[in-house]
Image 1 (cartoon, rainbow, N blue to C red):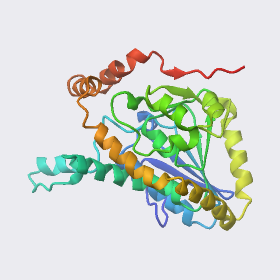
Image 2 (cartoon, rainbow, N blue to C red):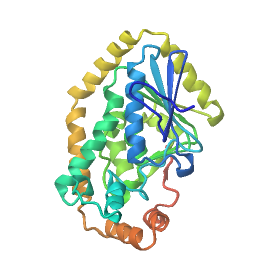
Image 3 (cartoon, rainbow, N blue to C red):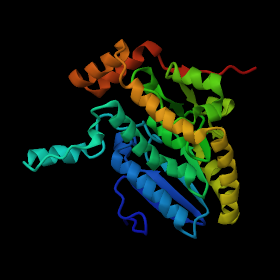
Length: 304
């Protein structure tokens, strides 16, 4: 049955359910590896508001349907109403120019800031959010996951930002707060990924678990947190987040969006080639040519 609530009504790209003080929000485009579309971002935002407002919810679990948490933004799709613009043009309706068409550096900043505002609610809302990561958590999927209060990953999950190799820099930058400067640079300057197990070892995620135990580990943490009153959970979350704000997390997000927009202007050969491959051959070829020099693209953390 399609969910209907105060903030969230009949979502098409997410699932929403509540039980025993825990809300489950599920990214639900499994046929697209839960690629993030503008509609999904808006529905995720609204689902978070729904959970934060409901008095029968103390904690939220965010997860993905199918084989992946999310493969990142839907590069093969259209953004910010451009599909509607095309439809209006085809129907002979008057054209309206929107900044989301991105014709300038400032348009790009504006567009990225609008995306930021939707994702930032996860950080800003009063109730804690556990992100359950399995399969791929790539590129823009990390923009969502790293806004959460906890990330628990399957040992064999694949977490990283391969788009940093040619497409831009993360416009929602929480990497340095989880990893410190050296590991943040190591991952962003190569676009390499970590397994869930290695991500836990370096602090990018709270912990990892074998894939067949991931649900149990996440559910147990959610159960334990859910027994604490929502008002007290809010006090704990917000004081820790204020500490991040004092370390510059809020200001950094604006600078990150501006840095990503600046990176989009580069005329370097790798970005130029990616754009040409997209135009001539499509996404699959563009990704293959971008990532091929990096092999499997995995960082393997050495242990004693």
